[in-house]
Amino acid sequence: MVTLADNQPVSVVIPHYEAHHTLARAIESVLNQTILPAEIIVIDDASSPASQRAAKTIVSSIDMVETHFETFGVNSGPAAARNAGWNLAKQPFLGFLASAETRDPDSPSDGGRPLRCCRARGGCDHEFYGCSQTG
Figure 1 (cartoon, rainbow, N blue to C red):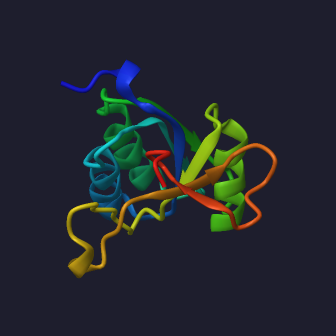
Figure 2: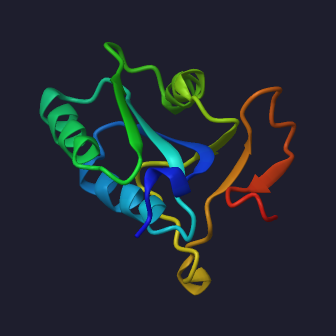
């Protein structure tokens, strides 16, 4: 059984806009990684109230990792949502995932791939590390 103490020092940021129907699958793919992140941050980019409620319900159902759900009052685009998640991140490594994406470490043939991340503090400079910190 995986416990919070087993999680890696990684924050996964998922920007979300009117995509609650794919958000659960995206989060599930993160939770199915060989090594779990310490936290998942979902930033809602001013979706409709119904979509916000659905996304918040999905995020609040997660108990394997720490979660955060934040909403924007005005649609600001995915870059602003990613930046907001970056600012909320508590971990030294960051991974980004769109709400319509999935990561599956065991199925590269279907387009899935292990989540990749970069150092959260000091900038990425395109130097990426495996979230498991083994790559």
